[in-house]
Length: 393
Image 1 (cartoon, rainbow, N blue to C red):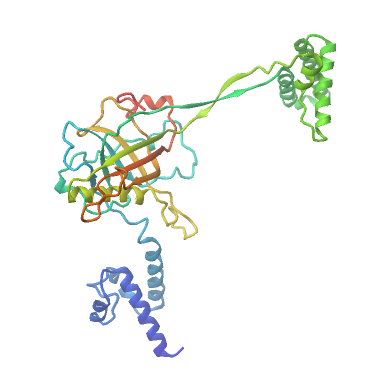
Image 2: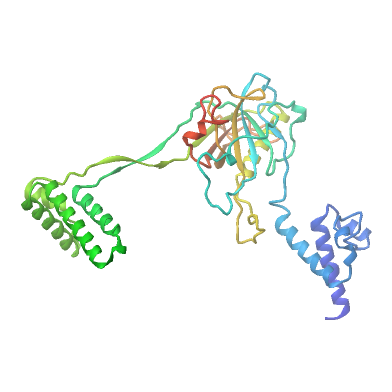
């Protein structure tokens, strides 16, 4: 490659770096004699200016360009503020829903969190609940900010716990006890001791089986039907021990059915807001609110905390929801843990027909939001704030 070609390639690289990382235009680039690290045009001058013309300078500049192209538009960007609808009706005594946008914080290398861990509680920043219309944001919210909305209609919360039915007939119970007995054999007593313990386990299992079914004949019949069902199922049949007992003896094994605790569940919340902007400023707020929800619930095209490459996606932002009265939490309504926004549905024909103002803003819109809490609710969540406020969670 000739010296002129190298110079042209370098100039092209400088121009690309300059245009992508500053607010300047091509004319400004030329006005500065192509100096992309001009102190007045690029803050990176101080960082790399001392290495100009060296191999380290070229590598650093290339790495900076790559990092900025990959990260600059996504994870590092942050713009807060307050958006509100309706524009003027929120006062010191008004009840409303406050939604704060926060960056998601992963659990970390422990991979689990303890029940009632307050790391994901809705504590902390008591962002302004009331701002005059002149102080509301007129730019999109990015990875930060607060949205204020009226209390939605059909207000409710539902707490669920999962329970599952479980069956364990007598034969299965005896088998479980026998298996546990075998596993608990103390091998430190030597081979003779282990054999004696094994014999005791089998003897107890036989005794329990005969006692449960009534007599030796019934026990033998039940075990025979059990083995027969297993044998015939090898050939593709679908026969159970209870089916053979019901056909042959008119009886079945007692299933000992019981409802057992299966685990906690995660709560879902769905809100519906009808928006009818009455003036240009309120229309701007509605547009920014819809955009904020869509933008901040979307997966981030940047890797996680390790600065991963484009093979990874970063978890979307989380939302803190609070019912408020003026600048205080509502004294009665339920609390929320941090939520993901799983669904945003916007209907731009709120009255069933298409109608817009002169600037294209729909006359009436319906915004449906579906939130899902990150963590389940535990009993100890009601013992500390915010669980002790109002009805708690």
